[in-house]
Length: 340
Image 1: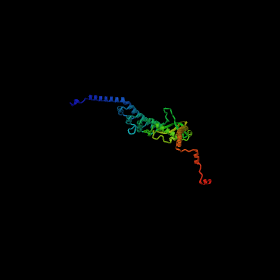
Image 2 (image 1 turned 60 degrees about the vertical axis):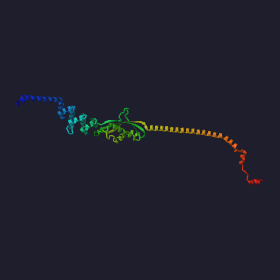
Image 3 (image 1 turned 90 degrees about the vertical axis):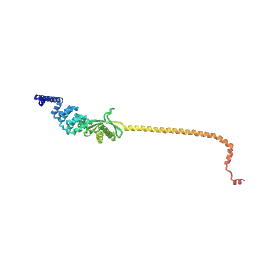
Image 4 (image 1 turned 180 degrees about the vertical axis):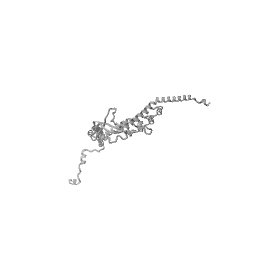
């Protein structure tokens, strides 16, 4: 009965053949979908396994991008081991984190060619921070020029600064910067560089005694601006500040003095008008007092006849003769005796 459940030699060979066919079909299917990538990586010694390619399909990662990046790293002579190099797992992790693997790999290769210290972890951090790491490396290798100030919406392309003698200068500068990879994460952007350079130029011109000194030596503007460490805590290193354009504007000091003189004149006129109004008011007040005193005098004059009449009736008035006699000196007793 046991022998009836055992397959015969033909059945065993048929089962093995079926299993081999299934395995062959699976291998053919795998090779048809991922074989080209695997062969490409194998021929380039990029160390990408078939299992990694299958896993990338389930993780929805672009296999072509990973394989191409690994080949670029291998051809550039950079390490691709799992500890410190750009292994397949580390590239997949950066892709799943939302990074641009191709950009990171190109940046690392460019930095390696330019003898710039940039490892994979730092490049990934810069990329995930939202900065263009490849452009940063390119700017570090080949410095770029920033115009100061930036062209505003009104078309203004120069800075306005006033020297100590009151003359305005219109200055346009070009700032050559190189990317500082060590401060790229968290460092200030080029807007900060433009603002600081503009502030430094205005300060340098403002400290000049005359605008002629600035026109004779424009280099003192850039030298004064560079002395203040304008690239501190920024993502760039300032290579140079060059004055591209400088023009003489209006005499701000003379205009301010003229405006001040006009203001003083208006203040003086207002003060004079106030004094004139006060004088007119005082004049009217005095006129009112004169009129009041005249009225009082008239009232007093009206009382004089009545007072004279009352004096006559009271017998208090004397004639002119009586007044003269009362004022004549009387003779002494001795004189009267002699006369006798």
